[in-house]
Structure formats: structure tokens, C-alpha cells
Length: 150
Image (cartoon, rainbow, N blue to C red; front, side, top):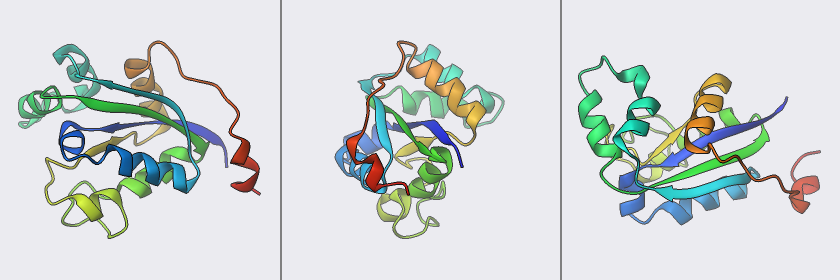
């Protein structure tokens, strides 16, 4: 087990639906530490870089239009196995198929409007954190950490 930092983004549909506080609360209650937070309207340039892996897919232009359509909330979360923990909290891509208790399972009905993005691997997290948090992350001591990990 190792400490990791992962990137999580509440997409425009999650922001518009007023789910930002609920989503942050779920990550905090799980025991992850928030080390970066900001709201931005993504430029087309940064959106294309973020989703470059999908650039040849037929849905790419619609994805770019969607992610740049309004504000997103960018977050960096730290903790032991933070990437996997975040992915479990988020749930499957299609909200209709996502397990109850996950963010997408509790609030999602669509594969396109799925409210949230989370890094899928350490290399992806490193790239996405560098892209969205070029100014760096916050370092601070979470006093409750001794009550989270044995």
C-alpha cells in the first residue's frame, strides 16, 4: 500500500446539478485528503489535451463541446491507494449500470452525462494533475489521519 495523489473532476453536468458538495463530502468521509481544489471553465486546448486518448473516437468532438460548456471542479485527493479508492467511489461509467452507493450509481442515468472523472492509473493521475494543477498542490497535515489509517 502506498500513498497516492489522484485527479478528480466534477464535470459541467455535476456542477449544474449542484452535486459538488455531496461529491466532496463522500471523498472526505472516506478518508481521502483534499490537496487541490479549483473551479474553471476549461479551454478547448486543455480539454483536447485531457481527452487526447479519445481523439480518434467518433464522440471526441461532442466530448470537447460538453466539457467546455461550463464550469468544472478540479480536485486532487491524497491517500493510500487513492486512485483505486476514488474509482470505487465514482462507480462504473454508465450510471444506469453503476452500483448503488457509488456517485454514478446514486445520481447517474446516462453514459455521457456521468458527472465525474477520476484518473485510472498513476501515470494518468500524474499527467492530469500536471495539466490541471500546473501551479502545484497544497501540502498540509491532516490531524485526523491517525484516526483513518492504522
